[in-house]
Amino acid sequence: MIKPCKHPDKNKLIEYILNSRNNYTSYISDHLKECEECKKLFASLKNILIKSENSGLAPSNHTADRIFNHLNKQQNIKEKSRINSFRQMILKPATASLVVLCVTGIFFVYNYFKILPGTEKISLSLLQNNGTIFHENKIIKERTFAVNSGSITTNNNSSATLSLNYFFNIRIVENTELFIQSAAQSRTKDGSVYELNFELKTGNIFAEWKDHKIRKNITVKTKHADFQPIGTGFILSRKNNLTRLAVIEGSVRISIKKSGDTYIIKSGEGYIISNTSHKIRINTENEVRNFNTLFNKKDSSLKNAEKSGAKAQQYHKKKNNSETNKEKNEKAIKNKAIDEMKNEKKSMQRENRKKRKEMLKNIRSSKNSKS
Picture 1 (cartoon, one colour):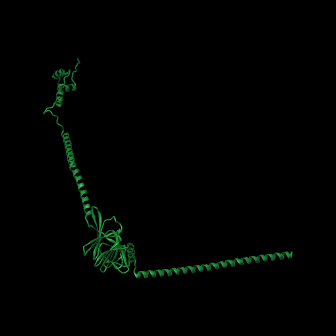
Picture 2: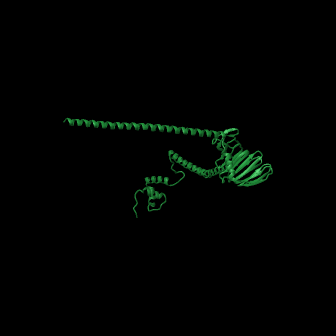
Picture 3: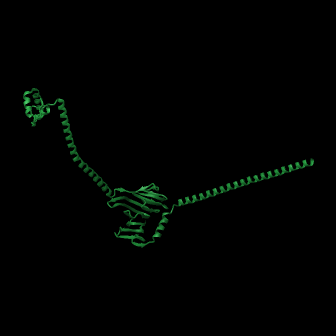
């Protein structure tokens, strides 16, 4: 048997208090009845180790405040994390929905205005002109003028070319009045469509559509009919009570106002409308040649100016040639005189050398005779 110590240590007392069975249990109980010192230590350890409603250890005020503050902070952090997680759960889907809604709205508005017909007006520009061209009785200059409505007028011996972005050109000859009713670009789901409406009051025009892939809706009106080209080039004339069409390329749809009849006129064909109307055969090369003759016809004043300018240019050319010839002659005479002077100088030098040689020879001969 293990020999017990006189006073049990704290560990053995703690085991005894916690009802742990060991070899020292009976000894400790007997020792506590006799030893006052161990009895006090036992009582203090028992107060600490054994729970009871009346035997708790109260912390200091400072420690209690620190504990309560820490617990409050932890509670606030938990509540904030719960609130933030709740906000994220709600705000993330809401933000995504708002972004999708905005993008959808922008796309809808863009496509709505994109397909809205007649939203954009377009202008025809004056590419070139001969003579004087008027728009609403005001003189216009080439490459500085664009128009989408109004009347274009040419005088005697004057011509002009109106263009829409270089893929649709209208050439106008002298004594022509073309009224532009409207020029717009309509947008649809299938793409852009150019809407052009003209009225030929009098004169001749040559309309050409360069790019056949571009969709168009062109109408040229006269007193007698409406003309709608179908990817084409055509010449249209209006004079007094006569309208004449010559299709150069493609085809043109004619709607007769008086009878309401509609015809398709193809390339190499023409149509004359007056008191009576009928189809004709044409020579496209002759039609184009005749139109170009009228188109390139210039004002007599311009021709006179060109002639006078050519004469003046020829006169100045002759004058310049005569001046250059005169300068060349003077230079040649001068060079000839210089050459003659050089030759005279050389001949004089040769004569002087001869005279010196003769003098030296005479002097030598006289010396020899004396000796």
